[in-house]
Length: 128
Image 1 (tube, rainbow, N blue to C red):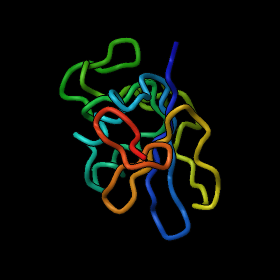
Image 2 (image 1 turned 60 degrees about the horizontal axis):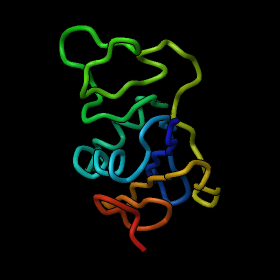
Image 3 (image 1 turned 60 degrees about the vertical axis):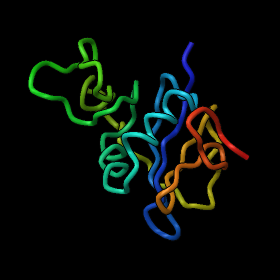
């Protein structure tokens, strides 16, 4: 069974961009990857531009060689658009006032800090 999550970045005082991730959304996996590998605004924006994900991994772009949905490189994100050819998989722009709790885990990068379900994220969990 999958553990779904959203990954969101605040892009202005009133808006944010959000993508969906299908697998391994819990803090000890996706949360840890986000904190360790997507810890600057530039890296987060690069990830968000990839669109909806099947799986979050340490790298956005594949190295040389084959990377597809059915034959992915082990450390590269698996994207529905790029790797599977699905349409309409781009990030969704939302108003900051809209709800952010549509999946089991909802990650928000704001002012250099990752939040999970509204709490500051640590390596293993969403802190209070």
